[in-house]
Image 1: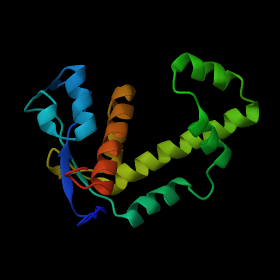
Image 2: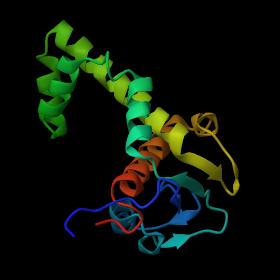
Image 3: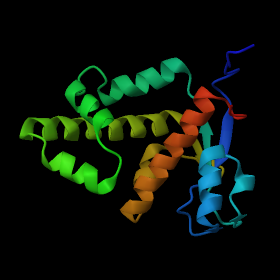
Length: 170
């Protein structure tokens, strides 16, 4: 069969985030883990590493997260600009500088929408942190902010992986 089917949106997966100070891994190991979602790829995960339990999201739960974040009112110009933006840092900075004020505002609005979607996805998926009930507010309290942002991004990546591909992946 060529199509993959998620057997249950109740599937769960335990993950860690690579900014956790209890994880001792090379950049290659971190990258491999983020690509595969397999803890065996990550190197040394200390016993005190923070473990997040995520449940897969059904298509309707993913759509609900997008709607709650403002899918029907998001900036379509911002979405288009987001897709068209160069990936190389210096080229992207010059490209962004050349945008009109309206285009910059549209891009900013779309980036804010994406941040809201990420938080809604984490809210719908996160069930436990270190075996105890948790919610997105707990994640929002992670400090420093750079670790909070990275945690949210990595959790969303894992959520998308298990929701779209299942725990086994491709």
